[in-house]
Image 1 (cartoon, rainbow, N blue to C red):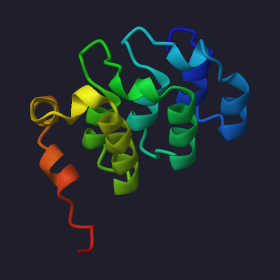
Image 2 (image 1 turned 180 degrees about the vertical axis):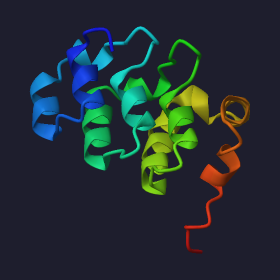
Image 3 (image 1 turned 135 degrees about the horizontal axis):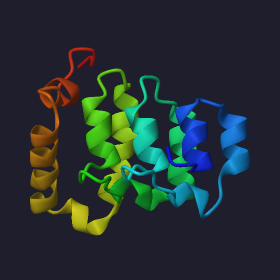
Image 4 (image 1 turned 135 degrees about the vertical axis):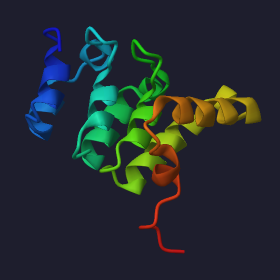
Length: 134
């Protein structure tokens, strides 16, 4: 985690109050040695906090577009995270779609292809889940 205090706080699950105390225009954009932003780390956690997601997105909405050292976005992380609630996926997708260039069919198709290539077979289960009532 490279000494990035904000990233360490998320990794160690130090709680919302500590996160709020550490958040700044600089810390919210910190990347670790793997290129992970705080949003990447949060989306990879087993227990993704909706409140923390909202705090991070409010402070740095562009984080949804950031890529790690392997070109993964937070949205691709959440698609691989089978423990994350569908509402978390929806929040990230909504934020991703706010960016005008992401609303083209090419961008949506690229997102789908990135998720298919970058996941161990879980993307379809993640997007089409059996826990969603119709």
